[in-house]
Length: 403
Image (cartoon, rainbow, N blue to C red):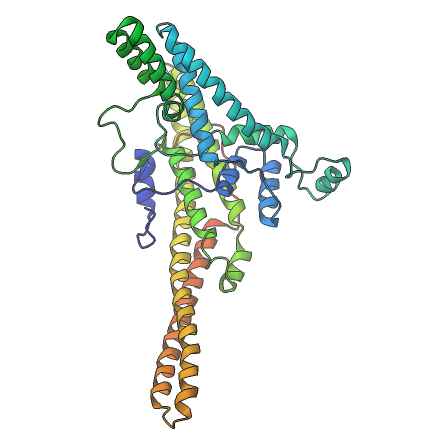
């Protein structure tokens, strides 16, 4: 999926979201993509503020580790808390897990202070706060709390059942198992290890995911894909080059990713509401029929989101292809510089034919490269028009389920 020469179609996106799995081994999302996706869970004003800060080059909260690692930490915390709720967990294992859980809570709290405190990011003095408020760049503390909560749900593939907890607590578990084995025998030590495996999420044979990376559901899959293609576009030097200067003014990719993430999150929340309504009142035929009608009327919204992410994918492929052409032109420029030196040397001996032929050939190749870049620029303008529509996306109704 991350291969630059492999086109991604709407059918691919539908299949991947339906399976909650994408092929290949794409990297984690960058911090910028994670922050923009998390801003999709803020209100429109807070979301626009995050986009504005990133677009203008103002700082945003950064952790000592990545935001995907924060999601893994949160997943491990929730898993251990669930295990500790069991009445059948041996006391010796529970004690080790509580110790590890306390350390994880401290790490999460450190991350929360970094995001919410905003030290070195948001203004702290009265005068500075007033200035940022005037410039509409100051994010209130309540919005920072919501931003941190959203960052805990950063899209991450193949979340282990407590895998990070296992890495953190395996040494302690081994020491406990050894001590129990010395006191009560190997059978008791084996029991402790088995309980630890269950609590910390030890991988079972053959449990490793196959055929790509898996996500919790199709909504998270589509959100990750939008962030992935965004990273491929903005991380490419061709997109930041002078050649695409006009195209960069036609679309704000930061805002488009934030808005796409916001719409996907809205649909996901509506799916939860629908499931609850069906569970509580699904026996009512009139209510079930009403829900079905609402779902049918809203199916085009999911298709529209698929189309927007597909446009991101096509933009990424176009920019990467243009980047290849620009690198080739750079090589031609270097070759032409060497060729001019050769020409100068040969002109002194009266032999210029070889240099002239080579220069003519290079000029033709450069012209062909420029023509190809013009084609890429036209294609990119078409992709941008699909992402940044002239009319805003219609407001989502109360409930929706895209299946």
